[in-house]
Image 1 (spheres, one colour):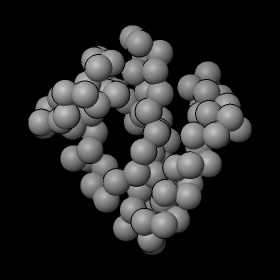
Image 2 (image 1 turned 90 degrees about the horizontal axis):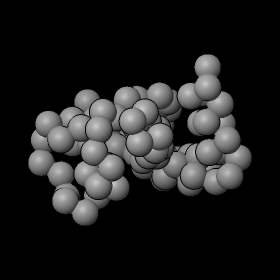
Image 3 (image 1 turned 30 degrees about the vertical axis):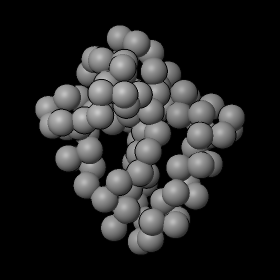
Amino acid sequence: MFITYAIYNQSKTKIYIGHTISLDQRLKRHNGELPNKKTSFTCKNKGSWTLIYQENFNTRKEAVKREKELKSAKGREFIKNLIKK
């Protein structure tokens, strides 16, 4: 199973959208609990990253498609509305 997700860093007011097969492990990487690339977006924007949205898919192709949709203007608006709630 593949997961498309959005995380939010409240201290930096940043949003990150991605996809993975292991959400728990991926969140640990974003939050610095596991090794991560020093040049990654979440490493450069240190702080606590919180999961705000996730969707499950059977194929990677579907997950990537949804990730691209969430990265569009309409998708980012959808994510920002989740944060406001």
